[in-house]
Image 1 (cartoon, rainbow, N blue to C red):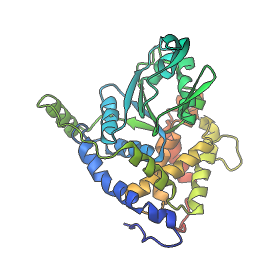
Image 2 (image 1 turned 180 degrees about the vertical axis):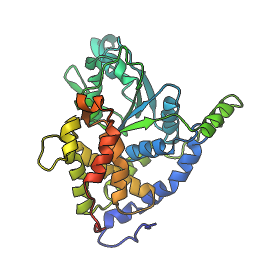
Image 3 (image 1 turned 30 degrees about the vertical axis):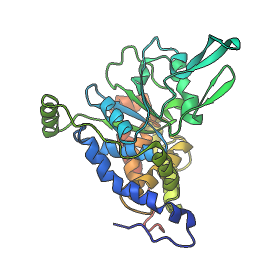
Image 4 (image 1 turned 45 degrees about the horizontal axis):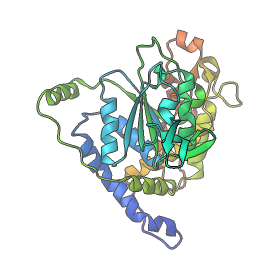
Length: 345
């Protein structure tokens, strides 16, 4: 395992943040221990959500009912001492129910319009079943996710920092759902898939939840710590060959482009944009730090290719008819695009 380098005069900013790096690296085991009080298994899911949290990105969580998606998000909010709000998305939900609205109030200065903040004014937002509300209401989150602000009656209201949206959607129960448009899907750093647990883990869940109440989860960090983690993640060095590899992976998913593999033209109607490459590199930086490394490797990019690309690649009817899944396309992309052999650290 590569250890963190000693501070040097050439890297004063990294030296100043060295203590934060060590806290982040050492804190992973403590975070997993606290989450284990409430969550059994799902290590890959937890890692991907933590990477997004430390990178400042939003997550779309896809999974069947009863897999502890809500419990996981609430537990993470407690560990990082973040103000948590859950918004249940329903067909009758209006944009003002999310962002807030202006109401007429009597004040000492007379009647005037006062902005009442909606539930989006929190640190960690759980947008539960986001695809059950119409596009007009879904779009109410776009400005908040991209700009970290809400505009009401021409006035901008800044959101609390740090700010994250973790949205869930159910892969079954398609009745009464509204697919998220590509522009909104692209705002999510990862699409994290929560699957059913192995039998032994499921037995552990049933045993635990039908016995005594779980121990309370302790707060290990603060919102200020998360903001410092964002800064230090961006300082992790990445070789140009690694960045170029991430860009090539994203570009190769676009049909009818020069150098695109043949199977992309056959199965894909829309590919990943520039944000895919950005999130691949940024997420790889966070993964490297979580594993105690001071630089990004090809394995970081390849591991995060699935959660980064699976919601940015839109399959066509031919792929669906042949039973091709997005994961199959990503796997073929990783085989087709050759990684750099010896990237400089």
